[in-house]
Image 1 (cartoon, rainbow, N blue to C red):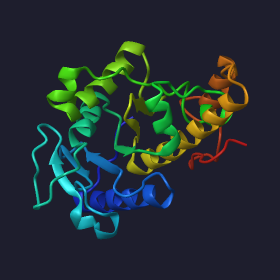
Image 2 (cartoon, one colour; image 1 turned 60 degrees about the vertical axis):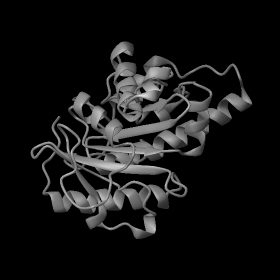
Image 3 (cartoon, helix red, strand yellow; image 1 turned 180 degrees about the vertical axis):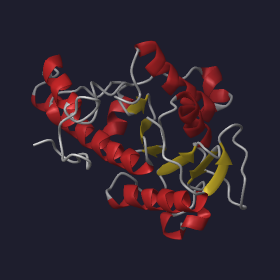
Image 4 (tube, one colour; image 1 turned 90 degrees about the vertical axis):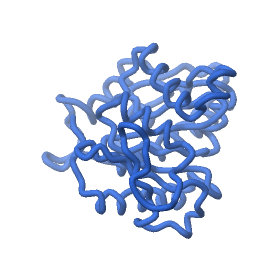
Length: 247
């Protein structure tokens, strides 16, 4: 799978709209979140500027950053403070085209408890092929020096050490921080961020009802994930693909 090329101006518009969208759907309060997208053909990432109110954003305010070294290529605005985290994810996961970071309520609760989001049922399995992992804590040295870069690296480490496919599980919970979600496009990353928060909410309430609730059987998880994803997928209309719940 490869990321479709875009012109920089098209990508600016998409990233701007993604940043607005995560506010509209309730994933972001104040300036607690950011969206980015990458054009791998030109080696460029576009991301929300740091600390700028969403009402003051526009396509022209999205900051252009070099994927290779993080240098800012345009404008006078500083990119999001999470820029280095986004860059580490893009560099390590070649199929990622867009990334969303929020401090959405239920996902942050799991982050603060240092718990993965269990896959209790088919709503979760339609989008994430198993539980959504939680990273280890950053060390004192990692927090003190190049904190955002090490946040990205601990995400990558989580997937590599756990043998987790970032295309099949397009999201993570950073311990004591919050969620990052991604996708092949910025639009898919937004969808995955929405789903991540919703399954975190469902997981929280499931455990509230039954603290010893079991995760869904693996064969059910496989069935629901694979009927939407991969070579054998059969959900949706030919040539159109599927979206939403797989009913």
